Image 1 (cartoon, rainbow, N blue to C red):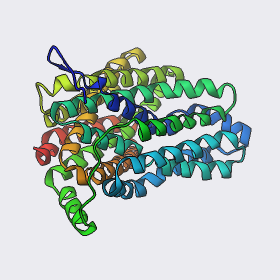
Image 2: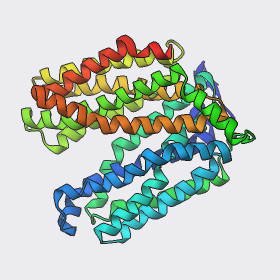
Image 3: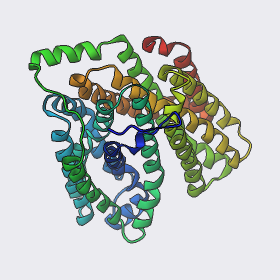
Length: 392
């Protein structure tokens, strides 16, 4: 690997293997962000009720909750490529075929199998980065990968919306791009693979020890809190408060949230520099202070455009948090158990995504539109004050 250093700055992004992982990461976030702009047209053209459209997301994300740990075990036992390549192929063929059908029930079946293929992509991307790099190089690589993820999250809605002008089914053709990515992984990715020499009983015993580590449990709790705040306070209720108080258009709301993603991407790309001055745990600690500050500001903001301040602060914190969590996790397990650890963390993230809207919905019911933001700020301060005891 050519992990070149330039005037003391880690430039692992030049590593060709990491560039291949970037393409896998981009496929991992393609499945939802690219199709949501077409939802109104799908409802109209297929004669659906608005309540049905969410099934296109639910059936896609559901397999990952149950399959991700199992696929992590297989990746540890048989190698990363043997799981990544068929996963990418299934993601491509099932997902791309969604653009060729016009029946909603068949669309749901194909989305389910696309979700099966996509279950392991994000977790195994982080696993391979953990296999390839160590120390500050690992932190820098995780940061670049998180930056690429944020760029994809910010750009896919625009790409999907543009394709949706041609017809609702065109955004569903994008997963076919995963086929050349599978080819790259199979023939061009040069990464170490676990030896797989441990007996299953020994492997499982080691996995239990890793997953039960106090620091690992601590990072799991931090991960849940992160996604409760992100999906509960911000993604669910920020559009509502912006619309209620300032009659903001969907375009204005989208631009503000895209600004957050851009800030996250820029901050994540600098993680190699940041870990030269702060530990990953220290950066996570700072990130929750930034989360709290951003959320407190939102209900008190007097003008729509000033929401950009909160977006900047939140994006700054998020750009520190996510890659630091991934870097810590990758270092908590040897290669032989890294796949299961990163995959279980992926399941934990989905738990946070699921709980977030429910928990902050309760805060909304109790305290009105400001409740989810103040509730998220309190949770952020609690994590800052005590949650990181586990990861020290």
